Length: 78
Picture: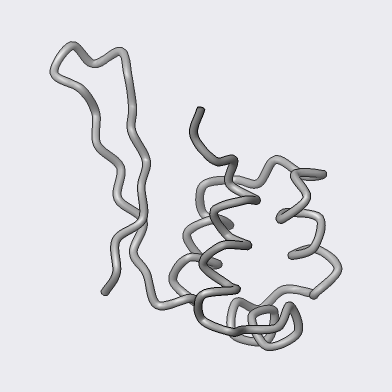
């Protein structure tokens, strides 16, 4: 089973040794909202996830399968 968005964001944030406050400042959102994202309380828009991922120094990559039915979203280091 793959990680949820919240788990991925938390893992990347911890690897970068960022606090919720510092990441919130970089991403332009409150630490409370980021905390809710990490705990999967909110289901964010892709644009919100992209903003957080970019603030962590990563890019969001969206790949569609050849049959067009399955979309894979992953993060890549810049």
